Image (cartoon, helix red, strand yellow):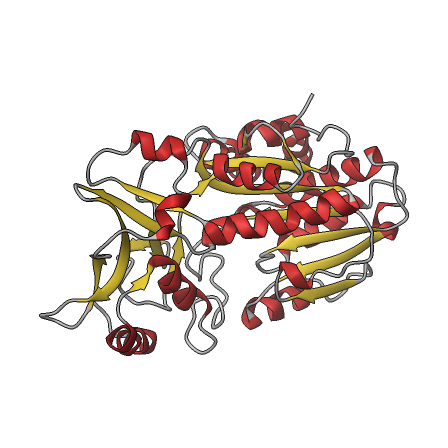
Length: 365
């Protein structure tokens, strides 16, 4: 395994304090101020480590922009609405969203945009992408820092929840034991280990996942993601509005080790090169929807990304772009976004609404 600067720091921490949870390892690998993956680089695109839907085609952000404008219209076209994007990447989705939103009279004029971003490198990329934008744009370091002005919210989160830290527990003959990151006693390298006894985290395992777990199965829990969902839901319940969450994961809580590392568009060992590879885990949409619902919001039925984008008119938009540009390139991008063997089935869409918000376009009714 490669000895990155962060690996050396983590090994010293473990030597002093003992093995760390998977969540603590992920938080350090992704967010360490000096050596964290997201704090030190722009990971997107062909030159980076992965490509997200907004970077594949403008169609993705445009359709989400039209979705936001329609939700705003159905809410009665309020004079002010706060548009929040969680993890905005390079700002590509927001740029496409705002351009398409101009088709709804009065929508852009009502917007106050907040981008929730902790990465200095990505924040700089967002500022560059949105430099000519006339809609007021501000940044926040976290959900708690989103301005509170009483305006309803429109929240967009594309590939955000998959990067939040998770914890893992393994079912053993002695009961549930938390998976930890420790040190190999022979090589002193980072290595997987198990907590020696039971811990409070087992109480957070979804009941369905616990029932389905066989001996030696791993179950993942996401307290950080559930906390974010609860905070967003309380804001929505108080001020009104809706959230649109697009990510990859499973619709029902179930056992499974989904933690993965990606570098240069290839999978790598999770414990290798900490700080230099992206770490993600599949979103448990059943548990995430429950967190929103328990905090006072309405969760729409989960939809596949392909079905959602078709309902919003991606086929018509692709046909228009093909007439004006490269038909083969447009078709390839469309198929990647909605194809059954591609993002169309792998990615899911969760809509969340305040109790008073009308049915969500493409997801309800």
